Length: 106
Image (cartoon, rainbow, N blue to C red; front, side, top):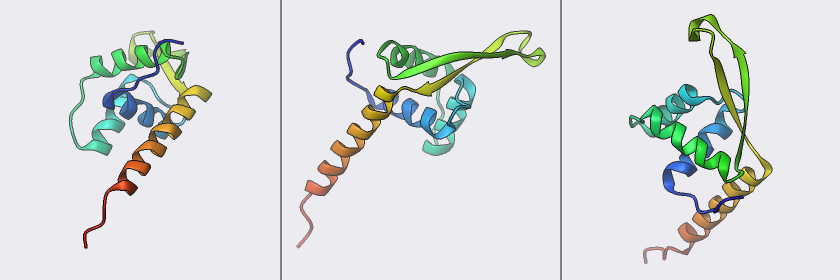
């Protein structure tokens, strides 16, 4: 498995894949991120992040069936691996610990 450091965008892509639960492919992930974050996202950036996350062993992919609407091409669907789920759990743990460490106003 390649390096495990996750940038913010890779974390967001992993979260979108988790939300889409089996229906995650490039365009659906892009739409989910745009919906959740209220910002536009470049499909090419999503594909690059998906490739990096798959190389790191945090995602697995499979080809769906070819469709006429896609000119006979198949969609590549992504799912979290066990390592991807653990990575998201670890990130949440760290973020919660840091948020909890912020001193409360007097």
